Image (cartoon, rainbow, N blue to C red):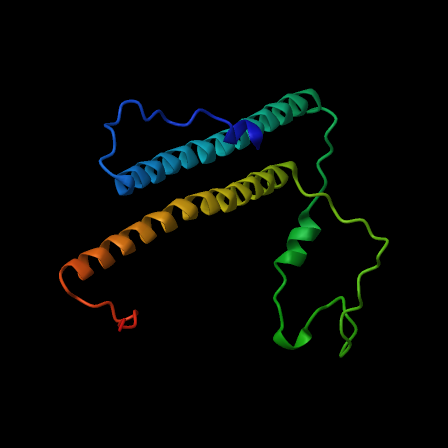
Length: 170
């Protein structure tokens, strides 16, 4: 994920100098959001490239093995899948009235197809990055909210309006 995050941050050189700290925080937040979109796009682009290379490999290997593929007769399977389901019959493999037994711990699970594994990896990377980016963005958003709150408090005091959260001083 490092190759996605460590990208050049959009330049602030073309922007005018901020008038105050609040404007500066707004520019920082906007710049962070641009960078976040770039990182997310990079993660998705890498997943697409892996998917295309997987499809290219599968196409190449299928061209090589076309004559050796045996095509099983699936007519019995299709007939069983099309059989009508009777509500009272339940699970045809389970004994009547008994719960399903736990799976054998020594049975090996079918591996996840490579396409799904790539999708899961990309989603995990996006979630991890989003968590990191949210923490960073929230820091600046909180600072901006504090600054706006302090500014509105000062404006209310300047107009003689008392903040109901503060106790009067004697």
